[in-house]
Image 1 (cartoon, one colour):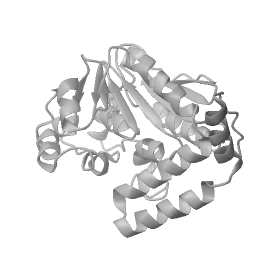
Image 2 (cartoon, helix red, strand yellow):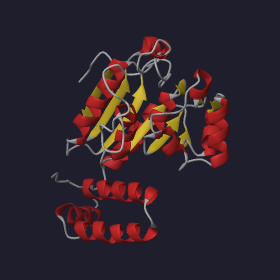
Image 3 (cartoon, helix red, strand yellow):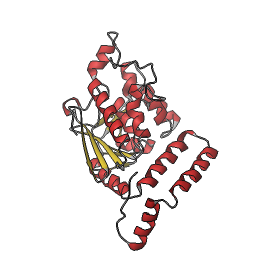
Image 4 (cartoon, helix red, strand yellow):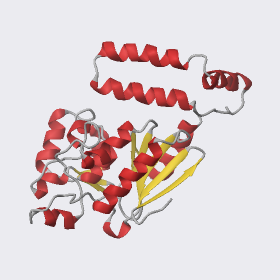
Length: 268
């Protein structure tokens, strides 16, 4: 599937999504917002998807909000003219926040492959992934303060679980550009790699080789661990394990390992 904003290919359970507006550094305009939301909905309902890679075509991952939308806001227009951002249209999120939060809610792991720049909304989009691989020369920024704004695509809620509070505050208040190496030190990057898209696909394929039931259960547990108390998390571990034990994919995982052969997974 390809639109004028996003390309999507699926092979062996791995969905490869590429933001496809390279002439604008994959900046987020209304059409891009709509395309990302549509892709998320499509993948969420596909039981055969086992991992997702998210990257950008051209010279950058994503430059953030399109400059034309920024100008429009100075003339009294909404960032997104077709929705009311004051409304919780997607669970706990409004439509703009949903573009980032949907990767957290997707039932399978998401790996972001980031290069060039990831500013503002692009940086927040990256944070929605489970795993983030950055090219060495990548530049990043919580850029909103430069434009007299604040991060409003779930960034404040994601940054606080990855970096120290003082680091998050300094980056948010100053809007300064920082390097991939700094991002790794802060906790925003998982690894720095020369070819992030290639590395992300390798990781996605490795995940796709595991039991799809176990991977989805693991993501539910790890999401829960971020915002719930320990007692709730421990009980959830027990419940998820009970649901996995003795299932066809659990049995297949054990047998495939003992017989030293590739597993043959079944899908709900």
